[in-house]
Length: 607
Image 1: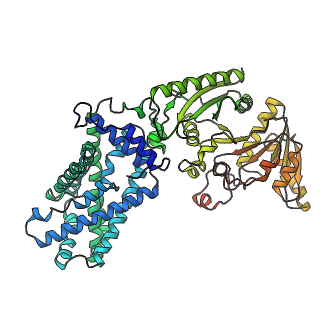
Image 2: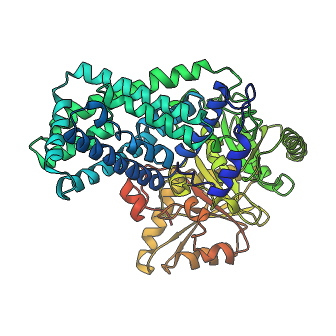
Image 3: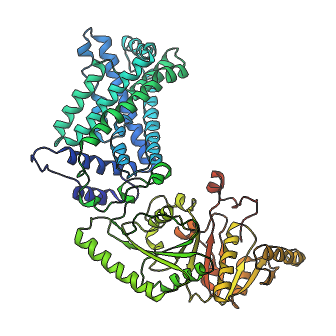
């Protein structure tokens, strides 16, 4: 099974060894149903958090291994009159897959579904996993079918017999086909359960062999074998692919899926007790909410913090919430005070400061570690709350202990649904560990709320410079400027850069219209005709204490995380710099090729 992107194989294996049972409690040589379930969930976490490449090519290997089953079954059936002898080598392909750790779709009706039933993985994540594995299995089976059809592997008698296998499935009534496939799904999922209950390789091979022998003996159907048979018959015979898919493969797919889920996974799940997850990694676990379960993309234990002090959360729809993730409450007081200043400009402003404590990824924390870390974090956050005491802003705190950093920011934002996330950027902040985490490019291109990232150089907001060329991110910068003007009496200047003296008048008109539209009509207007945006910002910043920058064409957050934000002005100016980025619906082509960001009104990219 493929490991998750966010952890190395070595660390994941070490964690697995420490967090799942190795011997049974009741009878030393056997596992209880709770212990088997624990082992299945631990393995499911490795599977469902794997990346596309690992899952797909493991599925391709599994699909190609099924070709062995098809080859041997057809060859032996053509060379012997005894049906029992003909099926003796049928299970060989499945032995390769399960013992070798390849991905097989019908096998995946158990572990990932178990994780989903425990609300540790969302339904979209489960469906994504299934589709990738199924596509890999079909691709591997198709390659194998091509080799068998054109490679001269079959003897003439075996080739003729193989052509009739798919036809036999098509001629089977749909209802009978479905229920035969459901029993096959029950067998495969049952094999997985017994595989995790076995203690040695010989026992596992025996279980796999005997179970899969029942499929041909019972005249049952397996979807990947059926797909391989259909592709072979299409290539070597006269079967239409659409007929084979809709009249044979699809009913088998549905039967295998429902058989595995309903008859085994759910039954085995409910035969376990409430102790099934009472192991070290699952204490104090936060399960997915109903909304996250149905619509989210969270998957696996790796998303679950070791400690999360935020209890059941209900969003006040009338409040303006600002989420402030911090790594060190002692050194990020100014950041939280700045968030309070922004929130105070709202009628019902709320600041939620969350202390994200980095935990080692290669070993679980015991109860003493968790208690000690949580107690210290709560003490630091209480001190922070006293320092930023403001009666006009509601202040909340929570603590997360996790091996992740930046992903926790996004998960907390999805859970609490803030209007704005305010983060510090620089040494010792959460950005430092972000580059080791998994798929951040996709995360940062789907922002859950407005983001404001602060390069702190004192956070003096007395004179604010706002460069703009229009667009949604400049709208966010304007909101920040208005809040600072209201709370701290900030003097705001607007900067617009044009390509030459001939465009100065047009630039002046643009600033007048834009300032009036954003309630900044009284702000000082600066038009620079050099055409050099960075040089213009640097020159204007000399007279200002804070600069608000909107996102660039490919987005700001993703470039900060990947350390690819090449703006010299950030390092050359003495003022604090704030990066503003607002969620936008960008087409996939724009994300891939970096075309300009556009809001719903069609305005161009920010400068």
